[in-house]
Amino acid sequence: MRDKIKEFVTGFKNGDLFTRISYFIFGAGSFLRKQYVRGFLYLSAQVFGLFYLITSGFERIGGLRTLGVVEQGRVFDEDRGIYIYTEGDNSMLFLLFGVLAVLVVIALIYIYYLNVKNAIENQKLLEAGESLPTFSEDVKELLDEKFHITVLGLPTILTVAFTVLPLIFMILMAFTNFDQNHQPPGNLFTWVGLANFKALFYESKIISGTFFSLLKWTFVWAFFATFLNYILGMLLAMLINSKGIVLKKMWRTIFVITIAIPQFVSLLLMSKLLADQGTINQILMSKGLSAIPFLSNPTLAKITVIVVNCWVGIPYTMLITSGILMNIPQDMYESAKIDGASVWVQFTKITLPYMLSVTAPYLITQFVGNINNFNVIYLLTGGGPLTLSYYQAGQTDLLVTWLYKLTVTDKNYAMASTLGIIIFAISASLSLIVFRKVTQGKEGTFQ
Picture 1 (spheres, helix red, strand yellow):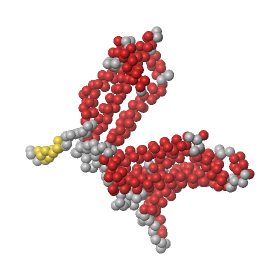
Picture 2 (cartoon, helix red, strand yellow):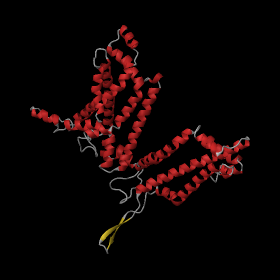
Picture 3 (cartoon, one colour):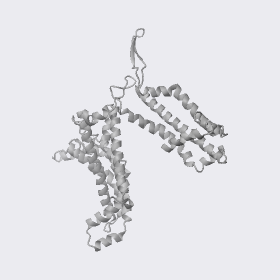
């Protein structure tokens, strides 16, 4: 950064007239040196950018300070005998268009930097006695050496417009009081700083209690949902691949059938079967036995979702590990047998380390995915059983399903956005830490 600033300053100090003009008029360093198309593009960016900022952009940026001041009013129309609502400011649009204006400013600054850099490079080329690239040469370069820019240019712009902009909007929402009592356009919402984070962590007893309880359950769920599927899927693959098993293809096909059926169908079916008045309990009661509260007892409900997740998840791991197991050198097992190693020692010293070295990225992805596993919990238990100890959440809710309920049921968008930031921070931190741990060793082994 320091070098770029130094280059910027010395470029103006040592630049000729055309280069210095480009510091104030975009594209001057190109246009005045007969690079008309490139100069016109730079100048167009300046004209349109400044026109937008002067006509509405700066006003939008100023609106970020208050997020609107004029509330929607209500006036009684005596002629028609009804109330007429007067238009007020929309805080959500103030925030959205304010962020958009800031991004336009950032883009304009970047184009300004490219314009100055291009002017300095043009001057250096001319001083070295070389000719400047023509428009046809620029096009040829974009189709050859800089083809990546041509291909990725439009996707990058669309990503900024439809991913980065909404993401920034949602992050900023966490610092407002946008909830069911502050719904635009009828009501305004304002900045509240870190109030939502404070409420989530310690200020609000019920909200913070819900957060830490669900955080603990989310980690317990993610651990068992990931590693039970992994270990049991691996053992199933080893069993099917063992020499004494016949009809290996048939067994694989039977287990793969669970993958062929859409997951949400299996989960909805299991929720009906395991309900208090479901098929399984009806059969038990018809035999004179007591019904089992699979989904209404907190402890049983948590165990149930873990077991059902194994049913839908183990076949995936079996398929992934089957091919890897076939590639483990058999002479390693033969040497271990000669040394007197037991089956358990062979598994822990040969099979498991080899599998981890290959499937470590898969495990990271699965663990983070299970932290955000919305389908299994929501479709199987709906987050229940319900409890008055939690705020808008049930006993089996994960953080991500609680976020959904805060948004859809409670319309507490600010708290939901705050929770989303926390979930992202947890997922990103775990991914980076574990991935760093994996890549420290040789050939991706754990150290």
